Image (cartoon, rainbow over all chains, first blue to last red; front, side, top):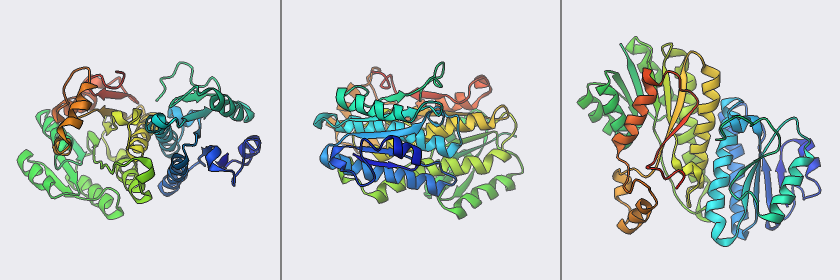
Length: 148
Length: 233
């Protein structure tokens, strides 16, 4: 899989699935870096667009990994914009790709959960097809909150 | 005096929002990149600002017009938006970025600029879209309108308790743009709507007006879907 993540710890946790030079045809994993400016936020989302487009050309699966707090709106406006933008992007990809069997989903990772949990979710979702177009939470921070 | 700032007010949904807020007694400061905003402002006795919300000089022009009014606005409606639809494999990066800048970067920047100037108890209403729940050929639009919900939530927390920030997510609304669609496509879309008809711009304006009003004083960080039930059907 092509793994494009800014956080070195997350990259290490996902190394068993692939790496920065991995084959897009095997799937794409993208986790945005925190953004301090609009320009950085736009660039993160543009990277997601490029990877998703590459994946769509081969029908490969797409996983966007976002921070759970940001997905709930409990972060800076820029980081929440990127996170919820990718939640919506995952839904649009799933909608568009369903007819050709393309899988897309979003993993909203809780900071207090082990990073290995992300790899476990990717392996499970890839194997089962569970979570198409959905946001899969890895922890408990969302309990009692309305998901976006 | 209660001032309402509305972006994308030249036509369509933005114009309807302006009309409705004028009915509610707001003085209008209407923003659009198109010259149509000048006619809307004349008809509604408001002030027109021709400005591009993605450009620094456009943002400066809006802030300057607000300051010149001498009053902090009570309402900001971030409505300006564009579409550049295409299935993903045919979508260009330029079209992806263009949609993001107008639909997401614009509201983010304008809210940041105007929040300090808004009256205590004021309201920001962002226009998202039902399309952020998923649509074919709208990856760019969906990302931008989902992003608007992220901004709405984060800013609702950051600006509370002084200001409220909410969003309206329209579904299929009859505008110049949708009237140009082939009728069989439009009919197919309408068949998916439980209320069995397209929305009208004033339907969206009414939702915006309620969120902007004192009646919604206990509502913040929320998304109101005005889509005839299409969000779950």
